[in-house]
Length: 474
Image 1 (cartoon, rainbow, N blue to C red):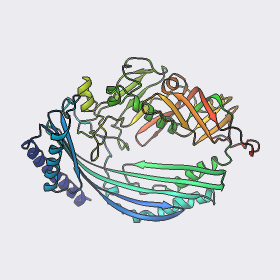
Image 2: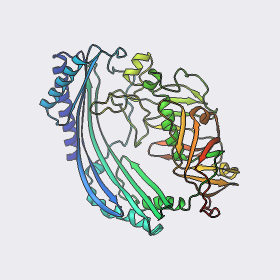
Image 3: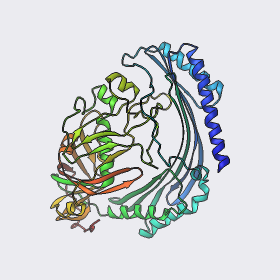
Image 4: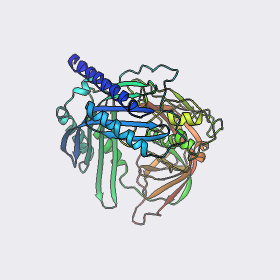
């Protein structure tokens, strides 16, 4: 282990030295500002298709990405061979492209040092995961398949395991210097149960981590995915109507990460495309709504010490008692809008420019019992899939892939061929309940929420369907 760690540290030092020399080369050859990002690592994976292991792969992840500015004119170049010569050639190409580009009047400068120290976040790198050979866990992945088949023998299981190891160096001409190494693991099981062409159950379960756990229960991932698939069998159509809905904890997280993420994105705000533009200080949600971005959770899957530009990340309050408090920014947007750089630049690969993004959304608990919210529902829906807003508008229109009809506090059956329609403002103001129970996983936390009334559009009654089949309480 110590030998492996020393080798990685030597790699990072060598990468930093190459980037530093290339930075000087670029500044001596016409660049007024320059950013160099080097990413080196690997991705190892095992894939499952139709209940069988279909492949084991290892893929190198090496990328040089250079942003060069000549005044306000930008050039971006990238390459995949990590050598001093290639890095310098990539810098030269970026400078050439900058000379040919039109000026960007919104550009002020690349990221500069901010008046805060990087936070210490534990558990973002694990040597055991870095050294793991995927072939060593094939038997465990087969257990994931077998566990799904024990729930329903007609299950068709897909999914797999992915391991990532990454070494990153970011240097720019304003004194930014970031050197980092991380590991991550993602495991997923996706189950389909095709009883007929009109009755196909589907469900999935996943697990995310920064470290390898020797005693991890692979079988439970397959079991839960199959149980979710069974729950969607016998789905029925419902009449179009307006009704309350409960979003489970994962649906709440997915929905708000997307809708709030678009709204508070500094680039969208700066460009006038955000539905939260010019709304700082306004009460947009219910008083119980508290949301923040926290990239400093130990072992969090999306935790980060630095953003993609090498700026130290920070905890950002987004909504406090329903009031919008902040946007998330990077160097480009913070400079233009004259506000703090929150360290939320998202990764830009190849020709992509870093843009602000929420790292790891958190939502506070409420005061309601999640069981009581369900028991008090006379007629409505229980939803287990995320709802998305359109990028440019606050409108939400989502196909309900995992939703269940509720009557008199009991989940009756899965529904099909239905769409949900609302908008972000109606959703945030229409929250009638927030559970006091929280789901805490992978570095984020979220409760269940009850939304008072939304529009449900259906393709109509299922003429072939019989009476509703009770699915029981969850």
